[in-house]
Length: 369
View (cartoon, helix red, strand yellow):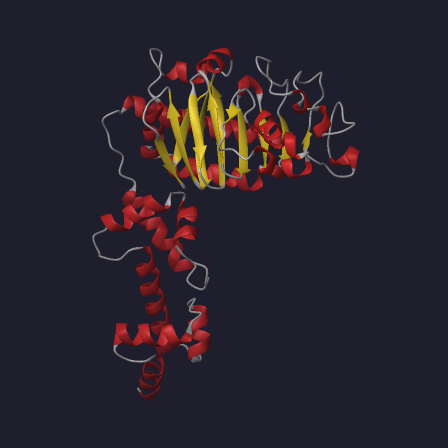
C-alpha cells in the first residue's frame, strides 16, 4: 500500500504537499497508531482526538484503487471484492470523520461493486453497528445466507460489522454512514440488540427521522470542509439523535409513528416558497424536508386530495400565475417566470385547461374591470 502515496509518512495534508493525491489525513502516528497507507486499522484503538481524512482513488495506481478505498472507508471492516467488482477500473472517493469511542462518519461515492465478508472475517474484527443513508443508487445485502434486503435511494440502512454478508451496489452509489460501538446500543438494549431490520424500522418511523436525514445530508455536503473539532461535534450530535431515536423505538415498540401529515405540510410550504425555481421537483422537495421520494409520495397520497407532488407544484404555479395576472401590472412572460414556468407553449395549454381562459384573456378581463 505504500506505493499508493509515494514518499509520504507522518501527518499528511495539503499544507505540506501542495495538494493531496490519493489520500490525506490529519493526525500523527502518536495520535492514532493507524495510518491509511498501512491497511485497515484492524483491532487498533481509535484516535486520541477528533481527526479526518479524504480519499480519491483516481490518483492511485489502477491495481491498488479498490484496496485503498476499502481500507480507508471501511475502516475496521475486512472484506474482499467478488468477481463482479471491476477492481482495476474501480473509482471511489469520499471522506471520513473520526472521534473517540470508535464512532466515525464516512461519506462514500463509488462505481458499482460487490463484496463479501466471511464468518471468519466477521468474527475477528469490527465490534460496531453502522446507521446509514443511501443518497443515490441502490444496495442489496445478504447476511448470513438470509434473503437479500434491498435499500432504495433516500432510505436508511443498518449494518453489523460483526456479521458476514454479501453487499451488492449494482449501480454507481453515494452513501454515508455513522458507525457506533456495539456498547452504545447495549446501553439501550441491555438484553439482545434487535435485528438490523428492526433497528432500521425504528429509525424510519422515529419522529426524529427528518432531523437525522437532514443531518446526514448536511454533513455529507459540508463535512469535507470541517475542521477536526467541527467533525467531532458533528459525530456527537448525530450519535445523540440516532441513539435517541432507537431508544424511543424501544419504549414504544408497538406505536407506528405517522409523520405523513408533518411531511405534507413541510413539503407544501417549501413548494409555495420556491415556485420560481424552474428546477423545483420531487427530488429537491424530498431533500428539503428530509425524507425519501417514496415517503414524500406516501405523504401526498395519504392526504386524499388526488394530487401527487408534481401535480401540486403545477397547480400552485397556475394559481400563482393567475393571481399575478389579476393583480400586478406585469407581462405574461414576467409573471410566468416568477411562477417557475419555462415552457410558454405548455403553460398556455395547461392554464386554459385549468381555468378555461388563456393567460392573456385573464389579463385583459382584469384590465377592463
